[in-house]
Length: 590
Image (cartoon, rainbow, N blue to C red; front, side, top):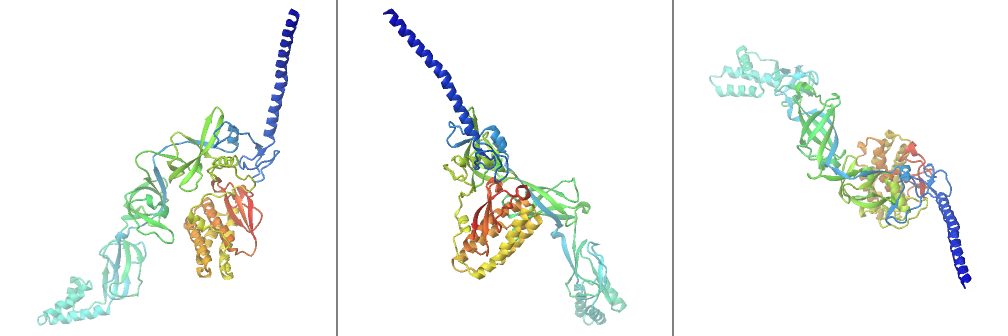
C-alpha cells in the first residue's frame, strides 16, 4: 500500500516536470518562430515615405517620385481608433516636424509698393491774360525754377495794340468823357496791364508792341504747353508749376488688403535712392475708388521735402502694421500646418505616450493670415503640439488606414490604388456650378472661339514645366485677354449659362495676373485655372485631339493638383525641373 502511494506521487512529479520542460522548450520555440514570422511579414511590405499608398513586396524605387522604398511598420492596435501611429524614424524619413501652439500679438504686416509723386495741392497752371502771339519765351524746359513776379514770356497782341490806341484817344477827351477814359483803363487792367505801363503809354503817346506775362507763383515747371511763335487765347495755359517743398508718397493697396488699411495708419518705408535709410509717415488719404484694370487703390502719405531730397518718380517700399484682433492674445499656427478646405480647415494633433506617437485630425476655424501664420479662431488650445511640416504625409497615411482625414472626415477605408487624390474635397455650390462638367453641346463657331484660350493655356503649362517665369507670365496675360475677347453670343441655350460660370471663375483666378512677381505665385494661380479648363474640356469637348488629365499629389502644398496636357507623357508644371516626372495620367478626354 505504501509502495503504491509513493509510486503515484513519483509519477505525478515526473509528469509535472515534463509538462514544465515541454512548455519551456516547445512554447519558447513557437514564440520565437512567431516573432520571426512577424518580422518577416513586416519586411515583406515596402512603401514610400512621400507616397504611402504605394505597396510593394520587395525594396526598390517609388514608381511616382523615385525615392527609396522603406519597410511598412505595423500599427499599434491599442491607440485611439481615430489616430494614426508613426515611429520617430518614419517621421524623420517623411520630413515631419511639429510646432507647439502659442499666442500671437495679432499684428498683420502688409508690404506696400509706392512711388513719390508731386503734391497735387501745390500744382498751379500759369495762364496768359493776353491773347496774341508769343514773341519771346523765358521758360525753356521742364524742371526749371520760376520765381513769382518773374517775366516768363512776351506776347504781341493786336487786340492790346488797339486798346492802347483807344487809351491815348480817350485820354485826349478825358475832360469831356471821363467815363470813356476809365472804361478803357479798366479794359487794359483786365489784361493785367499795370498802372505804371498805362501811365507810360499815356505820357509817351506811343503804343507798345509786346507785353510781358509775369509768373503768378513760384515753383518748378512740371509741364510746358507752348513754344515760341504759338498763338494764345486769353486764359490759355503756358505751363504747369509745382512747389516741391512737400511731396506725396503714393502706396498701392491691393483689393484683398483694403480692409486692413485705414486713414491714420503709420507706414515705415524706404526709398531705393537712399539705401540704409528708413522713413515714416501717416496715411492722410485713401482713394475711394479702385482702379478697374489693376484692382488697386492708392494710399497717400504727405512728406516734407527739405532740400528737395525726394524727387518725383522715385520708388518706395513700405511696411504697414495693423492689429487684426482685439487687445487679448490670439492663437496662431504656421501656414504649412493647415490643410486648407475653406474657413473650416484641418490640422493634425500630435500625442506622445509610452505606447508611441500618434496623430489625430482636428477641424479648426481660420482667422486672417498674418505673414506665414494663420490666426486660429476655434479648435486649438495653447500648448497643443501639431504637425507643422509634412501634414500631407500624415493625412495620406490616415486615409490608407481608414482614419478620419481631409478627404474623409468620418473615416473609413478609401481606395489605395494608383488613383491617389481621386477623392473629392467638399465644394460649395458656387464652385460646383463653376466646375460643372456635364456634357453640353456647343456649335462649331463656339468651339472655334475657344481655341485661343487652349493655345495660351498649353503655352502657360509648357513654360511652367521649363521654370520660365517670364514666358509663363506672358502666356497667362495672353490667356486672360483671350477669354475676355470671346463673344458670349456664340453660346446658346444651356451652354451660355455654363460658359458664363467658366468665364466668371477664370476672371476671378486671373484678377491679379499683372501683379504676380514669381513663379511660385504663378503656379498657385495655375491650379484653379486648370480645374476650370478640365471641366470645360469635359463639358464642351472643343478639342480636335485627345487631352489628358494629369495629377501630382505633392503640388498645392501637398494637397495635390491636376492639369491638362496634350501629351500622355507626364511633365510636371508645378515643380518643373526639380520633380519633372512626378505625377500620373488620371483620365483621357477623347
